[in-house]
Length: 231
Image (tube, rainbow, N blue to C red; front, side, top):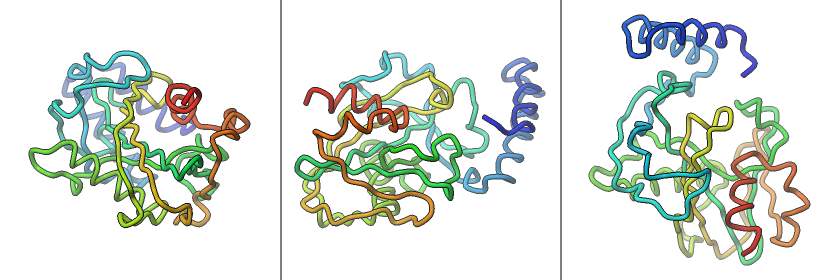
């Protein structure tokens, strides 16, 4: 986090008693500032309470009862840097035969920490993705929307969609998020990034993955270590 004003706002907020009127006031001030510099944080997204995630232990979990969890919906700007809430992020591993689709973050992207890194397609679960009473369908709505927006992925080329695991990391900004790692198997590699200047799509064969490891963002390293390294 390199924004000095944001650091100051968070430091002021965290001096107050958590949950107090002063804490909530300063969190709103932080949210208003975030929205002024990053309009995308105005969106309303799904979140989980940290206390409800106790059954998910370790950085990577292959099995979980994630679809039985209660969730709330709130302004993303209020939820960023929140000490007791995490936002689920569908993180999508697209595979065609022995090739995997990664995106290279470019300077036009909004996340400065990720510029020059290779990662997987992913994004927040918006309130528009919600299917009432069906959290699994809600997550799939979000991941298919992101895959279409970021790679032009049409449902017609999808052979299967499978949840492969959960990332729950406390490293840096990861502490705000819960990664839902899905694998989408497609019947063609004729897809590419749809966001010029923001990201470039690259296909990497399974045997070449180790050569790119050091350029992977943190979650992609976790996916490689736990799902791809020995498959």
